Image 1 (cartoon, protein in one colour):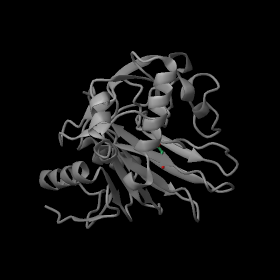
Image 2 (tube, rainbow, N blue to C red):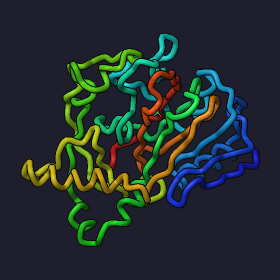
Image 3 (cartoon, helix red, strand yellow):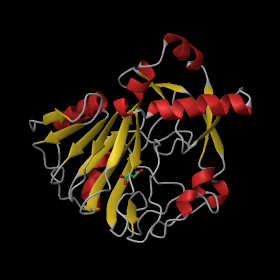
Length: 278
Ligand code: SIN
């Protein structure tokens, strides 16, 4: 077994893992150690990796089956692999708003694994927010109100014809006619591995709370969207070429900053299939 060195990078989430080459086949004990660190720290960062798409996929498969994005084409060789490219003159970037990945699906992805191929000289950091910490910080009265509520999620605003994510010149989107489909998930999700409760709504994909009037739903969601990503629940990662991040979509929201106009950024993403939130 490889001896992992796991160093937290903030008080609430995120840890850098050293002492491992992810291109090498990993034994079961090492995978278990990574899984434990993942569930404990919610997002793991590995630096100085040298991975091609197949090696990244082989690493991802140790944690579950890989998923295919329903609205963004993968690469020609691997439909499960997204080439997340921002061109120097792009106005919008992929993931440039707080969200957890694909919560508009009945079984949203468990986690995502992002590898940095080309990064700007400065900028292009990714922010992460711990949704367990955000839930824990609420009053007991608010927790009581939220427990049992159900929210509606959809990819409409992002992937319908003319949606935000269809406007990036470097990403090819598909299935726009299906993007407005709705699914329902609990507002408070219990993590299937660590048993902790966390907020499970996000500004990109959650449209309303079932059973509330429109203005009630907007007010409550507006509060939750802001609260969930308050600075005290976040960490920020500065990418270098060869960095890899692996985050838990069941407990984390993330935000890809676009503060590098005039520069190119290229990342390779895979996602791991998840389960029905409860
Ligand atoms: C994403 O939302 O998966 C993109 C994150 C990033 O590019 O930093």
